[in-house]
Length: 286
Image 1 (cartoon, one colour):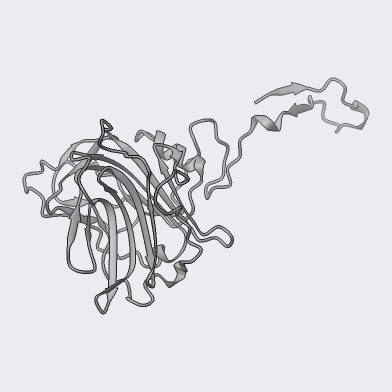
Image 2 (cartoon, helix red, strand yellow):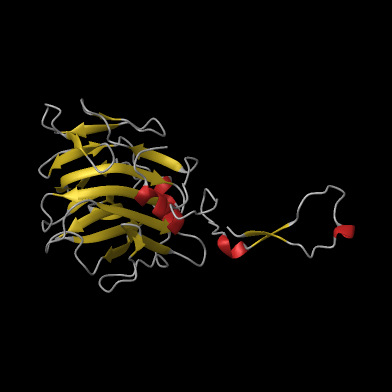
């Protein structure tokens, strides 16, 4: 911030207090219009906790309970090895390891209200099998009469990151045009998917490692204009619980992630680019 004393100020018209008058270069300030507001000093803007509806740190070291550090929706690690070997070093402290065969975290909640308006999902992931199909970061899918009606899915298919949303049989798919895993690309990746149903916006934004990537070639551009998010769950009731690291599809088939997940969050708000930067740089300290 540039702060200078204005020596040309008319002191006769100044307040009675004999204090210096400063000129501040507003161009030095970066403001955020995100849910938390604030000034971005280069490390991003903390989105805060007011709009946080689910937060799994995955910092446990034993057992099958995944603490929800925001609400009371503790998750249950299902079909795990039974010897606590699923808790390993992660991107931020500990993380949860998935075998890609049948284990997942059952949140015990469908998040129908959250998914029927603007929301954001943030997670760190690292795959053991970068080119495998249908690696699920998180997912929920419901149906009526054997046909899919509602879904929220973040996955990596054959190394390509994807985001899907469906409400009342209107489906939006987005798939990254470049591999995030495979072809020599490995290691931890940070994804934030933002569903914005604001009037005149109606867009899905996807950030990878702090950068917006929705405008790359390949797949849909994430346009929600034909999909009324408020219809989510109205037809089916959306009584299927969200899974982290797995997905139960409408036809009874299942998919899982073979790898690691860390710092999983859901917000019932549109996160800004500054919020995403903060999440990407967050290292677990206050």
